[in-house]
Amino acid sequence: MASQEIDTLASALARLPGLGPRSARRAVLWLVKRRTGALLQLISALETVRDTLVECDVCANVDTQNPCGICADPKRDRHALCVVEDVADLWALDRARLFTGRYHVLGGRLSALDGVRPEDLNIAALMERVADREDDNRVDEVVLAMNATLEGQTTAHYIAERLEDLPVRLTQLAHGLPVGGELDYLDEGTLAQALRARRPMTG
Ligand code: ZN
Image (cartoon, rainbow, N blue to C red; front, top):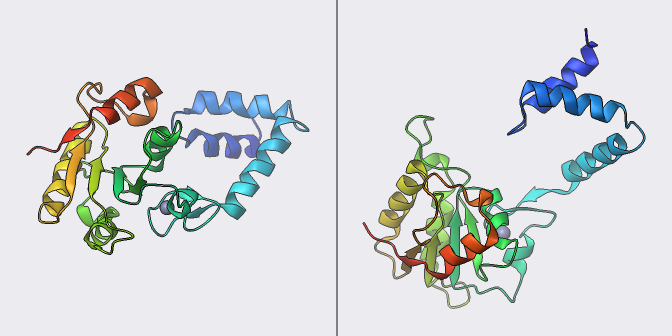
């Protein structure tokens, strides 16, 4: 029988993506044996994250500054905007600076099954960004970098429709992404190729 405290920690860890109850219990035991090492580091890292991370008001990336480092970087191409489902996708694409423009994080994907509607996603802010035709911020290309899943593609088509009347070039990642492929599971070579060979969005 584990103590209440261990159970509480194990249940908290078991809620993390990719970690079931069994691996959570193993992680707890591993940490308990390393109270002065790994456990302390974890506590300190969690506290730092809690105290310093904020969501960017412009793109919804997560960073220690707002606007985030990408939005604030003057060397970034302000005329190219890459729309992704989640921050993890942004990180995947930005890991090797595959994309030199800026990003917009939707915070999910449309899903009839999970009841995710357009108004649940960060779409209104996207429309505003693209509709802003001021020279400095004028977006000329929107890359729809949704995951190659049914819901990802439904989301991409929905956004393409909403942006249809705006004078921007709409592109999407090239085919060759594995069907069902989530961007942050792909290696950099595959991502780079999908981005380089991006093509006009079709209906
Ligand atoms: Zn940002």
